Image (cartoon, rainbow, N blue to C red; front, side, top):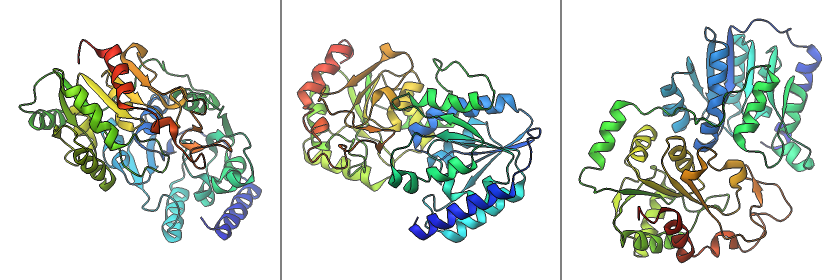
Length: 389
């Protein structure tokens, strides 16, 4: 949003605050602003499940940017009644933003719940009309962040605040929303249930037909990732040759994102093993079914790694600036391996957002991944999963 848009957003939020909001009432309908990527949403699912248990007869609407989350994952969970999409999640479409605000205001929701990534400042025209608004209030981190990330809107509009402590795992941070609403926390040691329809399992069987066991899935991730957390495809190529020298069959997984296709191209150009490639050939639910058939998944810090962990598949995650203590796989730790160089400045980001003066945005070297050699990663893999590999 432009500075003028932020100024209008502040005025709108203050106006709704001054007008006052309706008093709390029985929850017959609620809206969840669930903006986030695949991993963020997987970690948020326990909150969504708890909301559905607490309000089984209520109309539950999920609002987020169009993505595999809104188009595949959330509808397949069976936890929501409707999914509303907003084409311009970052607010470049003022008319679309105004229309969505009007739609939410007209719906007469009794409760709104904001995921940590939800842009509250894009919803100032409607959140003030909802009696109860639960959301995280982050600690002060400077004026620029306060404005750019719209923290001011949360402080004005949220009346059931939840803390967002630094370095707390996203699962526990999400559960604080339930604390703010007086709802019981679920058992966070139990992974959320990811939907894997029978049709997806049949599709996975077709895609992997002829691939011998054990299957090791590799997720290269997109090149040019803005958070600097993807290992170079050339390093993946070297690691693939180490793995393929053993008895495992390699399968590349990935979305239709052109940046993932470019990662595969660079991987192959660098001599990566010509494994069975499913990059761009599966939807999200199909990819879950493929992960189920893997004996091991090796990935960057991506939603694919989190999905594999939630499905109970052994994983190895390669880490750079992001923090496994916040966004790593928390379930059954014996099934997961975090591969890190141990460089002193890593991690330098929290929840994929620069949070320190010295961070992935300005460090100038990215040694956290640049110094992570394929031999180092291979030795870590062999140490944990040697009998498989």
